[in-house]
Length: 420
Figure 1 (cartoon, rainbow, N blue to C red):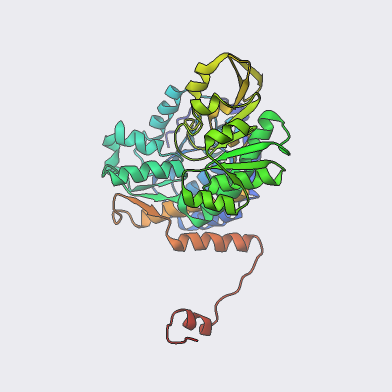
Figure 2 (figure 1 turned 90 degrees about the vertical axis):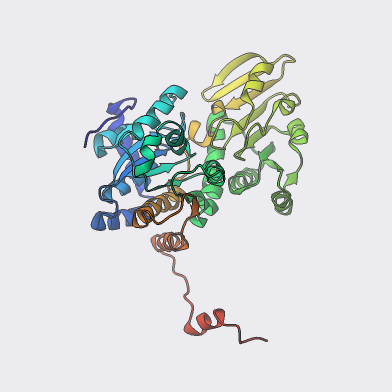
């Protein structure tokens, strides 16, 4: 294999390898899949282009794909999410072509995507659909050889469903994000814990007693709200969906429009997948010392250009903190450049939840190969058999046993004759 790469420092490889091995201890499902892949080689000869956060957990997914026989090229799905030591370890210790440097600019980011697809992939793996976007805009010559792809996150699924609805999606995608073993655990428990972790690492503030505003009440936002309340914050939720807003009320949170929340909030976290959820009118009424963070995939949820226009000075009191001083003296702090705070200022999700998310990625890649040419050009859910198998393997790894239906119970559930 002709290995190419662009990483910060290959001398970081040993440190990265130690962290990859540490993460593996918390990823038993992926380890079981890797052992089977090594025996069966279901991805033999398959070229995979992966645009994912380059973390210790992703490294263990890449190792699993390699064990299955795949040739993997990896680039970052966010300019600030790369762990440089992990990128180096994948190059030096595992022979992977990696194109990722923490803090890379936009030009480098897209150049890396082009390098990751240069080997003419059969499969794509995305976290945000940027690879799909580049292929459909700039490298349509590569589309013919693509079997399918997978998508990791809510924002990417939204983009891909829009492409499918518009009739422009050129190959099938499995929405890994929508698997029950992904969104119920990764989105809720992973995002909940890692978002709070990123905020605390960036600021070292006490959450107890603070008014903590969560924009949105999807699975990620539910986790953030739950963890913030658990640390003593007074949580406010903003929503546009009446069902989700009602659920937030029933879960015990205050619910109000962002314009009202903006006046009382101490900390704001966006996690909606939409643009300018915190906009100029909200910034204009925020109190002195307000802190803004984003846990959505792209850095558009907070209107950063508006914040820059309102500011008369910008300070950097801590790493990952930009403090904007407004004309009236108020200070508003933006964390992690408005990018994914859990990866910009911390290490992303705990390995134990990424174990299930990346198990979905690995098994869906196998499924795509097995069903090559049989799927339509649209976005598919994760097959229920895969979802249940991952849950079964996770329980097995945790040493937890569950009941099975008796023949009588199975017959009862599949019949209609027996009534009152």
